[in-house]
Length: 457
Image (cartoon, rainbow, N blue to C red; front, side, top):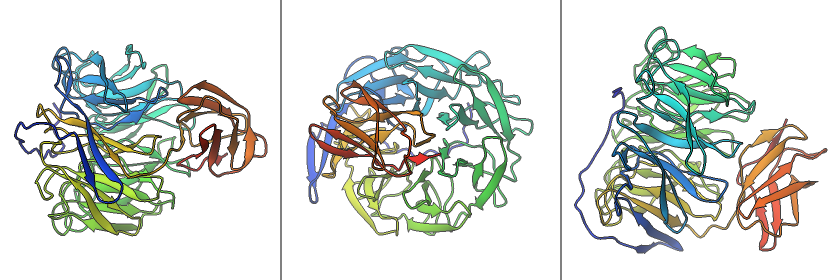
């Protein structure tokens, strides 16, 4: 097994469930499900979460399931949990899933497959799983630790943490039917052991990071084109920037890319940072107690413009924290985990289209196998775009609720034709005359606005 990542694990006591806790002004933490409540449940999930077309939340766990080897699961906003797939021995699902434009979910296993070096798979919302690629640890790479992301061209782009001709990992391009092309092989100087998923920037390039390598040996932040031209934007510095980036970057509404480093920084507890596409790097926060330490999860920019994340360690109860940070670096702890309500959250938060934040923890709760929770900031409902760019005539998927009775959809004020596919999913065609800006959906309950700008190509 490839063990490049640095794990920080704290043992928690087995305590009873805390069902509901109110913190601050209109901020409510709710435990929705205790993992391990029934046989075959997901256990100790570490990967991220994604909202599907049906409005449910989908995730993976590296433990649990019918075979004890991990699961793909879905869970409603009310906490009803269904295991869609139980992995076999040695497969080890890793990180989060990606929602494709076809409605299926895409992910990777760190190991397993026909050669034992991991796979890329897709799974339907009904639980039918198909392996798209078996890694060989050759020129294609091996031990993928992040899901592929779908680019504007419809292909999937991802990384393998090892392999390639030099052994430091690869960047691959994969068609939806499963044809893989290696477009870059890491050489250590430009980074080594890529572990995080890409984000496609508004410029069309993909942005990512490596766990190790670079001129200082502590990893890099880079951009890469769809053709495979890689540019190192920054070489991480242990005592300044932090190091060991374990979650994807996000692009904020201001154009900066935001992320977290699990270790390092002046206080050694990790950092929150932002970086421009041209490489200007700014540390926004240096973690030390009582802020929490070791942010394994990344960031989400909520509809109020602020960034939200979790730390895996410390805080007032030594079980991690939920925090808020502005794009200028103003930081506050919103919640401290105390084991009864979850412990050691590793998962990047998801803002579901009902406005609430959702996450899970690796430990704690009533079974000590982790919990699924919501954190209500009092933010309203919105719509989320499956694709955030496209040409006139392209059909765009839109997530939200409730859509039944929708009367109009517009792209930055230009009306669009649309089809309500379900109460939680509709499609709209980018209209003639559309310009870059938000997408709005008029429903019987009011006007819903997209959390991201749609860019007209």
